[in-house]
Image (tube, rainbow, N blue to C red):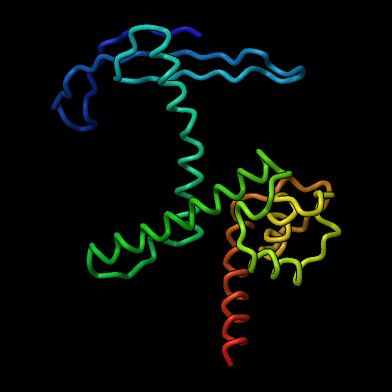
Amino acid sequence: MIYGTNESTSARRSGSKKRYPALDLTVIHASEVGVPLGRKPILWKLVTDLEVADLDAAIEKIRWYSTRWKIEVFHKILKSGCRAEDAKLRTADRLANLVALFCIVSWRVMWMTMMARAAPDADPAIAFTATEIAILDRLVTDSGNRRAKPGTLQLYLTKLSRLGGYLARMSDPPPGNTVVWRGLRRLVDIQIGAELATCG
């Protein structure tokens, strides 16, 4: 990894003679170590206006940047899944409350998806309620779920994803956020219907 290369630059707005103030920038060049056979190393060239005085500071900035993809995925769920931008609320307070609720839902979808990959054999109760597990058991069989072990988080996330259109074939990649979101939305509807049926 190479860091440093401070540069001073000034940018000119297109079609205007107004000049922006000079910026002191640092270019951080990071190269992956321990690359698997048959794959090229990941190379990052990051440009920052934050101070990078030593190797530890450069590593800190790289760690910050490495979370960018997770942030992008979270916003995708928030915008495409929850459709936060379609809200027609007229006051800032109501919009703030709605976005706060959507953030919880988006976090749950993202967390469930990542946990099923990081700890596939975990207890499904860490992500699902007892009612949700019971409904999934009634709706989706244990077989045909990419050979997920019985009673695991991976199995129940796969079942949930199948409600969202996931085919769960052996050749399919693990379930992603989109099918998890669709499955969770359908599961909530089914749970509400079941609770209403028992009330009558």
